[in-house]
Amino acid sequence: MLEIKDLVKKYGNKTAVDGITLSIRRGAFFGLLGPNGAGKSTTIHCITGIAQPTSGSILVDGVDVVKDYKEARTKVGLSPQEFNVDIFATPAQLMDYMAGYYGTRKKERDAKVNELIAQFDLEAHRNMKFQKLSGGLKRRVMLGRALVHTPGLLILDEPTAGVDVEQRRELWRYLKEMNEGGKTIILTSHYLEEVQYLCDEIAIINNGKIVAEGTKESFLEGGKSLEERYLEITKKA
Image (cartoon, rainbow, N blue to C red; front, side, top):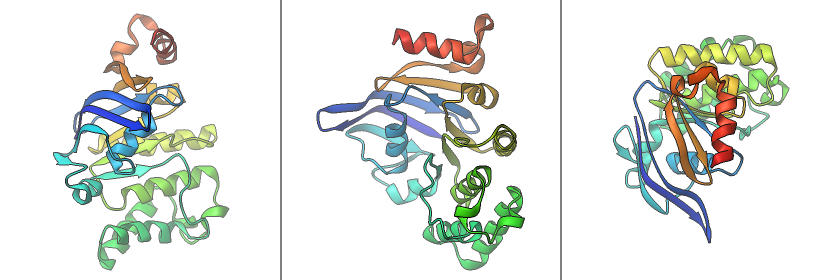
């Protein structure tokens, strides 16, 4: 679903991503980990077109994100860490706006919005202003907005930040169900128990490079938790 080859991204004299190569299979639940400033967000920005790669290539479902930007962008849904929405709009409006941005006709938009409102249990809140929603409900709306154009690849950047334990578990259930339904998901999170629970494949970025990659089972060998292994790897790196 995603092929990254020799990705380099520089900002002036600073190299944020330094030759990353990564392949994510269709249907994977992939954890992308690393300390703050390691290059995770820059990599995501290059995948989604927010940033332009300095060199290297990125293919989403076989489509080059630079050469065929418009088509590639339709294949990716992004749920960012920050709430980059009109806080006075409602969940239904926010999803409808995004579907319209991707050129979905009104009849199909209405059907898709209704489907997502039901999927994320937002019916009682569909016409409430975003700013009035709880943290957990806001995260559900962001997921719905990311999925409204039916992308094959869903990227989640800290999707449960600021959410209490009960609502986090509820979000995990939604994500598990989507992945079991065939959705390819990339997750970045500082909650390593979240990554350990959800993901089946993991890569760790540090100082702009991939320093470890493999199945979840390979990271947990020897009875260690993912957090223990992560700390070992990033300290070495």
